[in-house]
Image (cartoon, rainbow, N blue to C red):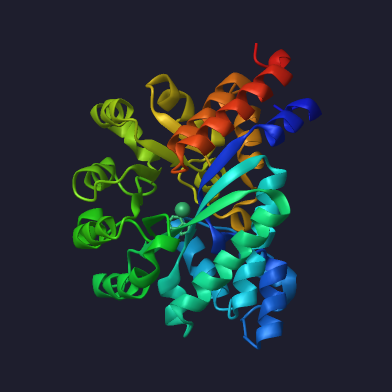
Length: 344
Ligand code: ADE
Ligand code: ZN
């Protein structure tokens, strides 16, 4: 069902955090072509219409193939800074107060870039976003799970001298065949560097992958995690332990994890007491930023009160200092007063 203009406004204004966003997944196709031109990178596409015709995905891997291919256009510190700043402008317009953002340095390093160039560019974009919009953001160093584990150790070698400029470690890319337990030593080392711990699991992989992220990697939050619904015992455990799930409905639809947004098990997870959040993953590829994901759920009939609870969960599940969380809770209470007519 279509939502009203007032509901759309309310969902944009709803104070929220974004906890599952790959900065490289915000590279819009037009920008990819512009940067390819500017940086002298040859792409095998004949203009924007041809490129756009490749945005139909059968599964996670078919998306990742295009995503990694287009990442080759990101070359300079300025490219990374602009990508970050443009995303933060969009996030601010979508009511995001804080974003905890993945980046995939191994891919950039394999493209010949220095880790520090990438980090400096992204941090520069975050500083510009904070100055322009007051938006808060921090970086999650994401390990590409289908590259050799030694490559993840090399990444941590590069990251270690500036670990205090990172928020967390994450694990992404091709899931099936690359179980979390492969990365036990990487996560132990990252924990020793003072990083928070999160990992993608249960997007295409089974609930067993989710269990490993808890028992072997000791994560504080699970990215996607929707297949947890197949294991009621694990659902109860995640609810009891207050582990956040960063669910991405439009991503699940476009990567054919579900054939209908209504089948993303948000309602069941909320009813089970799971700290479920809603996020955008790779918005340039999946047809929507975070407010679009909230709106897509409203269109399935999920109540505005439930969506406000999800925004509240996003505040609880983020790694911001307690004072910042308290300020966001106050903003959410003010929003509830302003939109009380929608809360039934
Ligand atoms: N990298 C970028 N988006 C991803 C996703 N949805 N799953 C796994 N790896 C990713
Ligand atoms: Zn993701």
